[in-house]
Image (cartoon, rainbow, N blue to C red; front, side):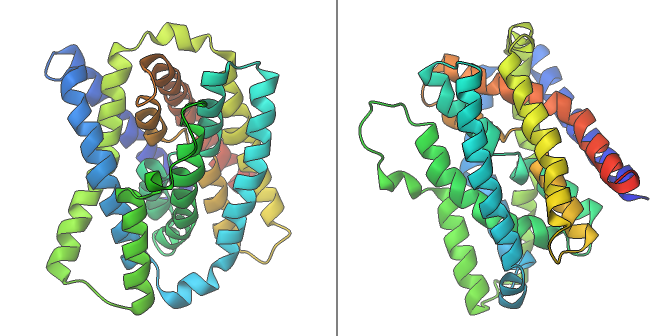
Length: 310
């Protein structure tokens, strides 16, 4: 299969997972209360395990040091997108309680739940390397700047203890084992990989279940949310591909970075926003809904455009 066909297949799987979540809630198998344990399992267990296993299995010292350019690309991306997101909050005149959430939605794409399976399948050779190295910086930014952006203003100074969470611990331990070249037993590796593999379908089922109870028509009219689709998922993704053409990177890395940039809003932003207030959490979920639905079209479009036109 071609890269485009593989991408379409992965998008199809995500649609199935989301529809499964919608069906489970509509048929009363799950409800808002029973969905919460799923989100807690994903964010506290499955996602950290997936991050950990991808670092120790997908990255080594030589590859990491040889992939510093990807880390620089990630750093540059977050600096630029932070400034762009700050401008967009002013452009759309967002209220203070929404501005930080909006910036987080602009900055953090669904790398863990969507980019890992997509990129690793589209580029079965080195795909997991690209997304794992990018994810190291992405997760650091999520649990530092992301936590800061989703923390209500006026609630006191930022508490560094918030940086100690399952995801950052997974990154730290994974990096230590990777740098010291310590290998975990194969049975444990297999078990953790299977646990981590549940993160993507469960996250999509969770989102689908929440979609089933959300007044979606309300957020279909939120013009600001379409700004994320146009600016990050389309414009920034294409620009990433074009800019990397001026650097000594191959076409595969350029396309992988573009697809990572064009991912829908990260599911974890919803879970973090829900800790503030239900209305803000609903706004974040509306952003995930709009970007995820649009992503079903924009990701294949970006892939097709960059592969066959540019």
